Amino acid sequence: MRKRAKWLLGSLAAVLAVSGGGWAVVAQPQGDAAGQERREAGGLPPATAPVKRGDLSSGLQVEGTLGYAQERKLNAGGPGVLTWVAGQGSAVERDGKLYEVNGRAVRLMYGPTPMYRPLRTGDKGEDVKQLKRNLQALGHGTGLDPQDGVFTAGTATAVKRWQKAHKAAETGEVGKEDVAFASGPQRVRGNDAAVGDELVPGKPVLTVTGTERIVRFQLEPAKAGAAKPGDPVTVRLPGGASATGRIDSVGGSAGPDDKGDGGAGGAGGPGGGGGDKKAKVEVVVTFDRPAEVGAPDQSPVTVGLTGETRKGVLSVPVNALLALTGGGFGVQVVEDGRAREVPVELGMFGNGRVEVTGDALKEGMQVGIPKL
Image (cartoon, helix red, strand yellow):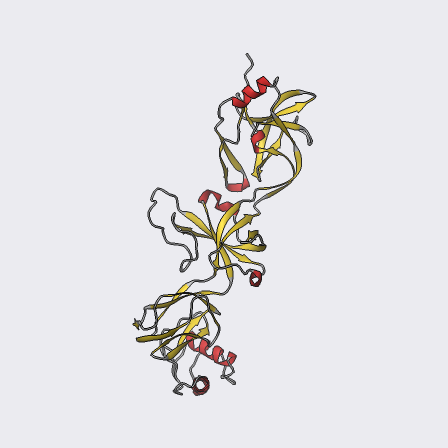
């Protein structure tokens, strides 16, 4: 009796990306129900689909979360009672108020070095340079050299002008509790303290982010190779709109229960329970035109990864594959009312199709597929 091949019926147990852009396939053929259908139909499959020649992409569709970049905690610089705080969702720019302690404003200035000490005449350092650059940008530091990291008498005069503009005591010094430095404009994601709370140095007051929109999502380590920094992506937003962007970073493992929702410093820590689950790799996407992305924070989105593209290859639907009894894979070619099995070599998988090569296979041929 002739041995028959078995339909895979979509039962490829795994299609795993491996190094070098290749693919490994582990097949677990199911029962021969489709073979029985063929026998009942005189050896013909219940349906057919054409062999196509064209470009095939290995792109993935993954679920992500819309957020903002550079989340961090702003801690109190000094003791006192919180008398005012910027509301959730508000945006604060240079010289804007973040919160008040005992009625004294803590204002935002730009720079990477945190405000770790009071600044006064004679001090030297990068934080002094930052202060000078901000005073110049605000119009109070005419004549200051922002490359000179020395707090000069001219710097003190500029500070007094800044203080006078805010009707504050003109001391010519900047207290640790007067300024918070950040990389740029900040958006308030949440309040960690309420008006009336007693603050102590180091206690979180606000959770803030940058104003740049980003998307975070997670990939299993075996699939992380599908996302490379600089790769283009398409993000489908709530309501059906879409936006283009690029992979900004790949790395920083996310715990099994971490949703990648933009925790401080990225979703990098291990999640809660679920010890039997595998950690995942966090991927961050930036938008080409972030100002056009108006969806709410933490909205669910779908990210389309371009992946690898093969040009001008032959492909068939994945469920057209047969697991041949002698080993390997094949397809059932249907011609002139007859069906024959043709062995094929598999290439890249993508969008429900698989690249195939074989001496007897040509574009336009009809191959059998099981009844769905």
